[in-house]
Every structure is written in C-alpha cells, then in structure tokens.
Image 1 (cartoon, rainbow, N blue to C red):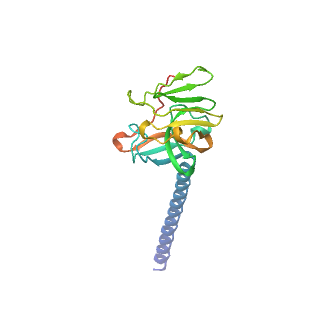
Image 2: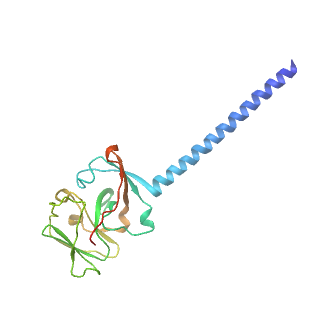
Image 3: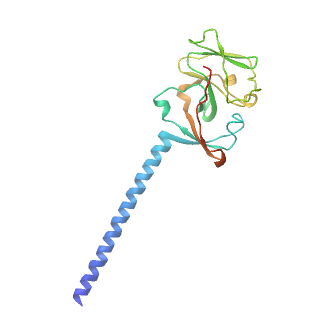
Length: 199
C-alpha cells in the first residue's frame, strides 16, 4: 500500500513537471511571437487604411494596405511609387500619394501636363503616366524646384487631390514607406508593382 502511494506521488509529480515544462515552453513561444510581431509591425511593415478619394481609381477609400518601411533604408524612393508620408503642415496626419518628382529636379505643372526637368532632360520631358486614365488632366499651374532631400507628390485623382500642388514638396524625413501590398478587399488583393514610366 505504501509503495502504491509512493508510485502514485511519482506519477503526479511527473505529470506536474511535464505540465510545468509545457507551460514554460508556451510562454517562451508567446514571448518570441510577440517580439517578432512588434519588430515587424514597427520596423518593417505597417498597416494603413486609405482615407478619401484622392488616389482613385487605383486606391479606394477604406482599402487596407501594407506599407514597406524597409526598402527606403537601402535605396531612395523612385518615381511612380505610391508612398505614405507625414503631412508637412501637420506630422500627426498621414497622406497617401504617388512620387512624381525626385530630388534635384524641377517639376512644372502646366496645360494639364507634368514636365520634368533634370540632368538627363534639361529641356524638359512630359511625364507619361500609365496609371492614370488617358483623358485625365493635371489641373493647376506650378513650378517647383526640389532640393536634394525633397519629392514632389500627387494623388492619382488629380481633380480631387490635396498634394504638392498645394502644400509643396515633401522632405525625405517625412516619408514612412512605400505601398507594398493591398490586403482588403480580398477581390482587389495584390502586390503593388512599380509602373513603367518614360523617364
């Protein structure tokens, strides 16, 4: 009878030890998963919800996007990429626009077109924008000279976009990252590729 009690205690002790090890492993996995999620969320990719119609028809209100924050640590932003940045006049607000002008360039908006002046095109070249509908004109008259850390950005819905035509160039320090993936709605889920431009 005494041996049975000892054996029973051993089984209980063994069971509790196993349960304790399992719980410890579970806690380890949870902590590692939490750290991984935090690192990915705050240093690599961020979720972003589209607000408003300024990027239609390419991005619609309430679409869910994933922003790549890593690429621009290794290379500069490129013309045609859609970016999220802090609004220059209120850094607590975030805007979604497309890069049109790069550092050191001069951008002219006139007669419904965008003309880019740079080292390769000192006389200027009209930017061909395949992501816009063929009959869409860029309204406004403006010439903007960009310094070595500035970008000229526009919304794809040119008649209804508050962008660099109004608030001027965007400094690189305000750029959060580029749009990498659209996750919602599911029927429009896609990796966002760079457009082929004539410049």
